[in-house]
Structure formats: structure tokens, C-alpha cells
Amino acid sequence: MTGGSHARGPESDDVGSGSSRRRRLRLPSRPQPRRPRGAWRIGTPVVVLLCGGLFVVSAANSDGTDLRPGRYTDLASLVKDESDQYDALRERVADLDSQVQTLSASLSDKDVRRFHQRVAELKDPAGLVPRTGPGVTITLSDAPEDVINSTTGDVNLLLVHQQDIQAVVNALWRGGATAVTVQGQRIVSTTGIKCEGNAVQLQGVPYPQPYVISAVGDQGELLTSIEEDDYLQAYREQAADPAISVGWDLQLESTVVAPAYDGLLDLSYAVPIDDASSSG
Picture 1 (cartoon, helix red, strand yellow):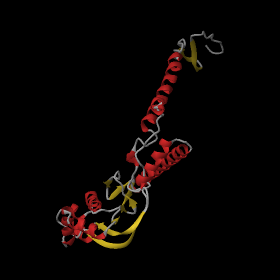
Picture 2 (cartoon, one colour):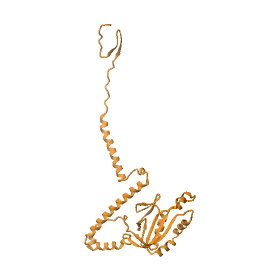
Picture 3 (tube, rainbow, N blue to C red):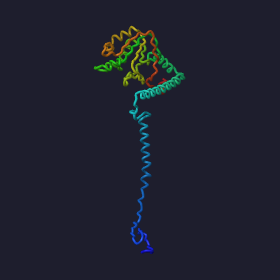
Picture 4 (tube, rainbow, N blue to C red):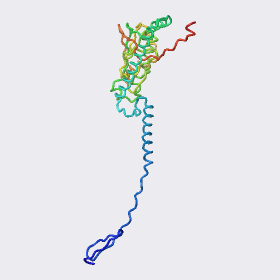
């Protein structure tokens, strides 16, 4: 109807103009479901605690080291990291040894003095005292690059290995050497020589070739021991073979300087003196 009014109830709307109108039903609004807040209140702290636990476990297992060593992409970085750790440990041990010596020197005890005297007597044969005198120097090196690149045989014969260095050191010891060095590092009975990639590691420090081995001692006896060693005889034959040409050079030295060993020694610790034994 034109000009009249049309009452709209709460459940309908009039849409349109003039005499043409459409009725649209309005659906009652439905209440929105409430989200369970209790689950989030409990779940969030649990997740945080689990993450914290994982961090603690990772830190304990790593013990201060990298759990993903594969991210070291170059050997130089890895070598430097290992060398720095070794230097830090060596400084720590030296500091503790100094403290032990200071405390021991302050004791007025005849047994302690006797042990100190015995230690002083053993320092030289143990390699803890510098040595200087006539001797020999042997240099081992890989074959030239052109020989290595052109070989059709076993390339291992063209390279210096840890057993080659160890054979020279053993022959020098048998020849009566009073001190032996490799790359300037004093060698003692506990020194390990091992290959690390294309380098040889001594006392935690890697060294590339050529490897310089020097010994203090009677030159005649040292040369005799080297000449009589079967392993070194085979090595020298390969060095003389043009197809192998692994490096061998021996020089007589009027003066060889062997510094004192400054690496890590076997760890020791003090124990309390038994009252019963000390009183007896």
C-alpha cells in the first residue's frame, strides 16, 4: 500500500520500494562457542618447560663444544679451534702445577724434600730439561707434485706417513739419542705421532710436511742405527727411485738445540698423608 506504514516485527525485514516488497526472514543469532581457556593455560607452560629441558640436555651433552661439527667447512678453522683448546688446557695445567710446587716447597718435611730431589734427578731423562750438542737432522717430505700428479701406481708410496716419522724417531732412540725433536717439538716417551688429513699431529698441534727430525747424540752411533734399520732402508730405496722420489735428507749437525718438553704430562693429584703411616 502506498503512503501507508508497515510494522516490522523482530523476525522480518521489508526490502524494496513502492508496491513491490520482499520479506526476508531474520534468523535468530546463535551464541558463539567459548574456547576452552584451561587447555592453553596448562599447555603453554608445559611447552615452555619442555623447550627449556631440551636446552639443558643439549648444553650438558655438548660440554661446551659444538654438537654440529659438520658446520666447520674449512680445515684451518677446525685446526685453530683445537689448537686454542689445547693451549688453554696447557696453561691451566701449568698454573695448577705451579700451585702444587709452591705448596710443596712450603712444607718442612724430609719425605717431601727427598721426593723433590728424586724429581729433579728424573727431569733430564724425562725430557723436561733443554739439551744442546752435536747430532743429526733428517728431513722427510712428500714426492714433488709433478711426480704425484703423473703416477699410475700407489700414491701412498709418494707421501710421508706417521709410521715413517716414528721409524726415524725409534732408530734415533736406539742409537743413543739423548734428545729428539720433531718440527722443533721435544719428543718424550708419551708423545703420540698421528696423521690428521694431510698433516701430522704432535701434542695436539698439526704440522704440514716437510717433517724435520733432529737428535742430540753421538753422530756415529746415530748413523749406524739408521743404516741398520730395515724400514728406513726400504724408505731410502724408494726415495732414490725416480718413480717415487719421496723426500729423504740427512745432515750432520755440529749443534742441535732441543728445548725442554712443555706439553701436557700425565695428570697427578695430591692425597692426604696417612696419620698411621706417618707416625710409624
